[in-house]
Length: 171
Image (cartoon, rainbow, N blue to C red; front, side, top):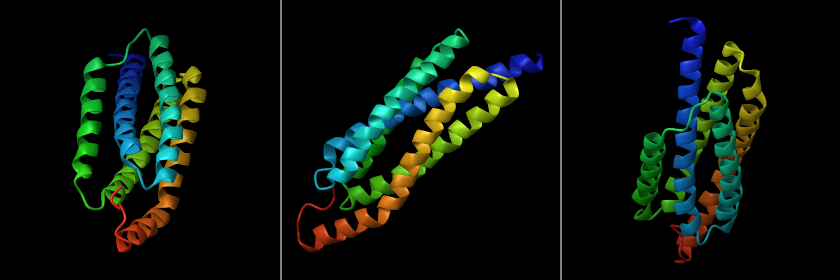
């Protein structure tokens, strides 16, 4: 197997994996948006990032089409289900919003690393058409990861204030 074919296979597999991860992200965000009753700033940011995620999925699909490939339905379905299960797992926690925030921090940074890896593969494979779409998605994920990081103190303080006042604090 020649190097060009290896680069292509690894890159296309990475695109399919990223597509599935973005579907997982949609599932996670959908559950969190509908449950973030006392944390509208979180829900609003998730709604905004959800729109970006839909655009990221479209970019990945266009890149896959350029290789005459399609996303993996099995991976998309499995990770979407996984996202729903992860979100459901936090539902019953007294500190659901905190657990979701910690998970979001990890998830967003995972996505940042994934896009950085894809950009590196695109450079080595000389897939220049992929640079702009992947960099756009990387920038969006970096902004969201930064927001999640910077919002942790605010979310924690609000959670504690609501808990002290016996208001709905878990979400």
